Length: 270
Ligand code: NAI
Image (cartoon, rainbow, N blue to C red):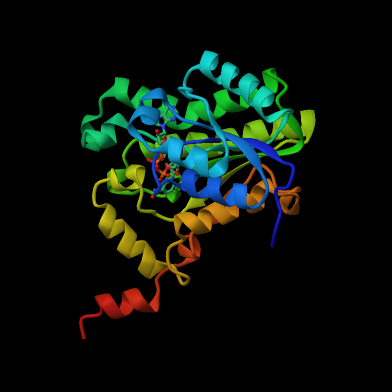
């Protein structure tokens, strides 16, 4: 299908390198006719490869720390100027936990870092939505997406305080979705993605095991970053216009599998 996003304008957060889900989404969105600005934290822009992506997508890069209302306000205003109008979609593809990064055990969390995890990975989603509302940046039927993980609902030992962050993220999608829907028919959802090989993903302890286990527990296998990018495009398009306040499972069937034949075979003793 072509031109699903023709004439649509947006902001894509979180493209660090070629592996990033946001990177793949930017390429797909461009392919489908969208125009957008790309943004990331200033340090990620310096260390990453976002300028290559910007060239490929004919997009402008605007630095913004997603925890700063000042940065976000400038980002939304500049994006509308650069793109020539209000926005139709926003992708929040942001996650970081200092406790995970520094391998703090869950029984010995650093609480300042815990606050940072929540601020960067969850509360920033509220800040993005609130700034979009206050700058009156969204067109009617616009679509705002965050990316989540099933650790919001179930315990995974090494996901640590990111599990709490994802639970808050999903809750914000419901609460803000209700508000923004009534105010301006703007849709707010989260996509709960399979484990994916990216910088953020690989930072989680035991990630390879996660990945293999999820692969075996998913009848369709793990959803790739590219699959996720396609789903994001669908969610930005008019084909999904009545979907809001949802946490959408994008996991090859993982979340509703009890056990699979593959795992039974692998674990059977006979
Ligand atoms: P990634 O490491 O490529 O992307 C994370 C992005 O967050 C980076 O671009 C980073 O610069 C940005 N970021 C961190 N702090 C920021 C700040 N203060 N302001 C603005 N941006 C900031 O990894 P990935 O996997 O593409 O992550 C994207 C989203 O997908 C995250 O929300 C992640 O939790 C989620 N997700 C990832 C899964 C995985 O296994 N990789 C599975 C399920 C969800």
